[in-house]
Image (cartoon, rainbow, N blue to C red; front, side, top):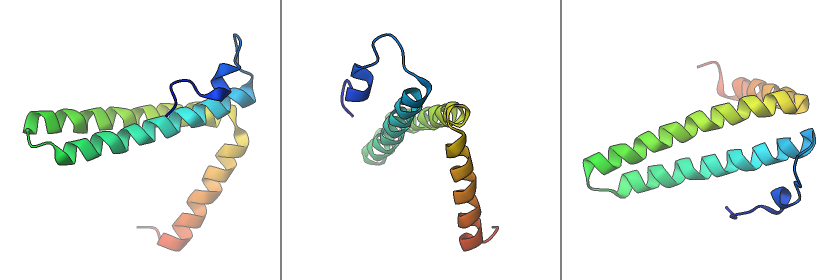
Length: 97
């Protein structure tokens, strides 16, 4: 992840709703990357206390993803519809459980 994404470099004191939704998507990407990083580190760490710490940090990042997804749902109604459509399609292909 870049230290300053070009999208955010142009904020000049505020983001409109569309640009904020884009920024939230970038933040979600960052959180998902962080989850993968912490879990990969946890798998490589021999020290159990350190491993558990990295696993806990990964869980916290998952909470952040949930928070950001809720914000994105509020900012982008089309995203909500498409998420619901994707869930239906997956359910049809995967079955109910």
